[in-house]
Length: 430
Image: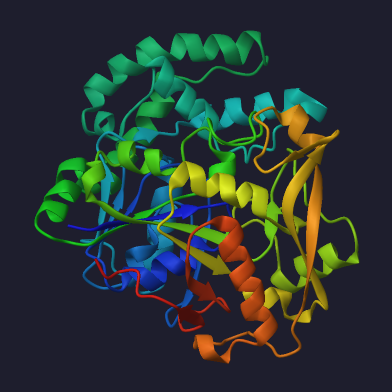
């Protein structure tokens, strides 16, 4: 009855897609539990190169059911486009995809509101992707959201929209001075959504729990990372959902007793997209070199990612919140070309030395990193799949990260392909 949670342990973009694809080969279900198409997972395998935004990464493994949970907000148009792209690539998803009937939908007006609000913030912009994620979660909280199940009954959906749209249109017209959204235009789109997605909308929570009760293996696919969590991240520069272990439970309606392992995915360095504090950020040639070598540009937005040294303070905090049973370090090979590598082991805030990040964003912005410097390695790690072949200094670096995180590093990724992976320990063993 094991469920294995795969969580972003930093600001997202840690390489979860590759790890989930790798582990899904031995799973019955891969289930996405939070976020929306503001998150992107890159998968490179023998079938090609893929960028997924809503469909779980287990779609490339036969006999795996791919589940979009109730904690996800779904843009139906984006999901349809993604399904069509997979079908065009020869990947049959007709019987392997399920969407929770309780998942909330990103409506066209959510995308409008997201973009309009971000533009109005100007220099105080929080770095939203403009995909409508925040407004969709806001409507969920306000109890004015539209669920996937609602498009299965268009007559009832019309009644819902006639209740919801007056408030939404008042904001569009009176605050942003744009044209209102009509019920007819939404219903027209909803009819297409029902036709294309209706057969995939099912009671996901019951299905996942039944598989777990029967002894099946479920991989819980996290999106983004803990430092973007609404409660535990660098608020207000965060997302609108919970990418933590708590989000995995509520976002799929599974029982905590089923979760056997919690894997935290860490890059061998840190990156961040958008605004917000970043204590170890690099503004020199080393940072630019890492960005170029690693092609650090957002899967969803295409924006250049900010680059920094590995932050042990945030890593410890991440582990404390999520309780990792194992850590995974990705993109170790990106550091192959660097002579000396710094690791943040503490913060200095005024005269205080901190071993945990302060809760206030203003205080975190004032923190200065305390670094240790480790020697780099001159033997490439790229493509290595056997731990014994790692250069000595690379192994020293991994051991230091393990100590800072506070849990064993059981998987090391040395490249983008499935096979470029060191399995230190088989984490799928119950």
